[in-house]
Length: 524
Ligand code: C2E
Ligand code: CA
Ligand code: CA
Image (cartoon, rainbow, N blue to C red; front, side, top):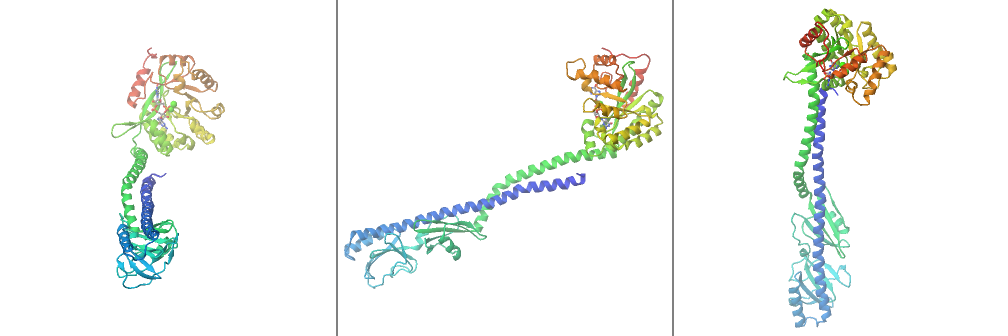
C-alpha cells in the first residue's frame, strides 16, 4: 500500500472497527431493553390475571355458599348473612337478591325501589354468569361495577379492583373475557391494540408501545407500556455497555495506529535516510589463505541514526527490498564505496571490493550504469569491483543472465552469496556467468563437528573447483577452520578470525599493516 494511503486507511479501519462494538452495543442494548420490557409486562399481565381470578373465584364461592345455605330470601337471618359476606370478602361490594326478575333485598337491607334484574351478558362455567355494565342501585356508583351472577344472587365487584396492581414503571393494565369482552382497563390505551391483546396471547413492540398479554382459564390480562420507558432503559443499558465498547474501540484503534506507525516509521525513515544519504559502508577484510594477505574486502552497509544508534542491515535491507526502496540504497552505497576506496584501489591493483547487490537490482540491471559512472569518476579498474548476489537474484534466470553478462563484460567478478542455504541447482550455477562462490557460514561452522552439513562442505568445495569457481569461505572464526579450508584449496576467507567489518580508515590501516612485509599466519 502507498504510504500516504496508510494513515487514512488505518484511521478508517480503526474508526469502523472501533465503532462497530459501540454500534453493536447500542443495538444490543435496545433489543435487550425491549425483550426485558416484554417479560416485565408479561409478569404484570400474570399478576393482573391472578388478581382477577381470585376476585371472581371469591365472589363465586360466596354465592355458591349462599345458595347451598338455602335461605328464606330476605329473612333477617338472610340479610345478616349478606352483610357478613360483603364484609368478609373484600372485593365484593354488595350482594343483590332477586325474585321474579326484581330486586328484593341486598346487603344493605330490604329494597325500597324495585329494580329489574339485568341478565348476565357473559356465561361462565357451572351456571355462573357475568353482568358487565352499570350497577343497579343507588348504593353503588354507576358504571364501574361488574357482577357475578348465580341463582337469585348477583355479587358486585369494582372493575377497578381487578386491575389495581401496584407497578414499578408506568403501564396500563387490562383484563378481558376469553371472547375479547373488555372488563377493566387501568388507564388510556389504543382501542385497536386493546382489542387485539384481548383476543390472543401475544407480546411485542411498535414504535410507540410495548405490550404483552396472557390467557387464563376464563380471562385474558394484558399490560401496555410506553416505548419511551423502554428507550430510557435502553439508555441505562447503553451506559453500562459504553465502558466495554469504548475499551474495545480504544484497544483496536490503538493497535492499528501502533502497527501502522511502526510500519510507516521504518518506511518514512528509510526515505529520509535515502534523501540524506545516511548509509555508509564498513569493510570486512578478505584474506588469501595461502599467503595470509588481505586481498580485498566485502562492503557491508551500515546505517548510523542521528540518535547514535545503528540499524541492523538484517532488519532494514529485507524491508527496503519488500518496499522497492533498495535501488537508491544500492546507488548510494556504490558511490560511497568508490569514494572511500578509490585511492587504495588505484594504489593496489590486486585489491578488490565486493559489493552486495539485491535481487531486484540483479533482475533489473539498473545499478550497472551507476556503477560504471562511479568507477569512471574514481578512475579504478572495474575488475577490482566484485559483485555478490544470493540465488534469490537468479530466480528469473534470463533477466539475471543479461545483467551478469553485462557485468562480466565490463570486467567485474560475480559471486553467488550464501551458497548452500537455498536450492540452487548445479545446472543453474553452470548456466549463469558466475565465477566466485561464497560458502555460507553454516558450512564453515560445521567444520570439525559431527554435524550433517560437515559432510557437505568438502563436496561443495570440490564441485566449485570443478566448475572453475574462486571459492571464498564466509564467517571463519577459528584457526582450525582456516587450516582446513587452506588444506582443501579454498582461495579466500573472511570472518572474525581476521577482522570484523571496519570503518574505511581502519580497514585501510588493517590492509597496509597486514600486507607489510612477510605473510601473517593467524595466532593459535
Ligand atoms: P552477508 O552478505 O552474508 O554478509 C555477511 C554477514 O555476516 C555480515 O553481517 C557480517 O558482519 C557477518 N559476519 C562476517 N564474518 C562473520 C563471522 O566470522 N561471524 C559471524 N557471526 N558473522 C560474521 P551484516 O553486516 O549484519 O550483514 C547482514 C546481511 O545484510 C548481509 O549478509 C547481506 O545480506 C545484507 N547486506 C549487508 N550489506 C549490504 C549491502 O550493501 N547491500 C545489500 N543489498 N545487502 C547488504
Ligand atoms: Ca555478502
Ligand atoms: Ca554471505
